[in-house]
Image 1: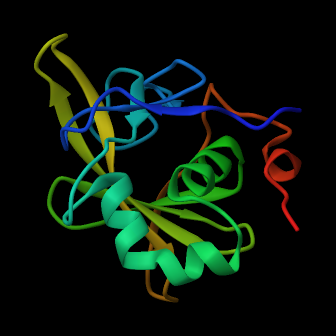
Image 2: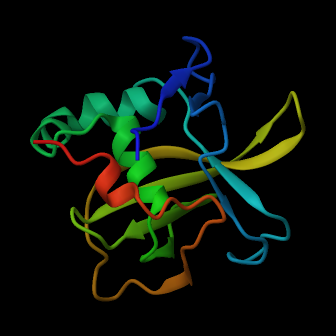
Length: 157
């Protein structure tokens, strides 16, 4: 399977990064999370020091270099696989733990695309982390845009 193509729509912090021409990287089915009545896409934005691809890269460059991935590659790989759990995060945020090596936490925040009036989960950050023993799962992660070959498509080195 060929590796995906990641294309920023622009350089503004709120511009989306497309994966193979799509701004929706994954779709969480309706009723997966409390209060979620419709299917919700997950999107990655260019971001800045506080969120998005730039935040992930600048905050975790050593980790990404060690595992031979760009921020976009690792996000895509993790969202394409099953085996994660949602946990409650800070206000308006959900934490997605993807329990596949390397273990990681993806922090999602509900946003609204004003141009299309579409609600979506924006990727705030991602870092190495395991759930704590006292953390309680809200739901299992599954996506209608899952890629069964993601674990081999990006293998490097």
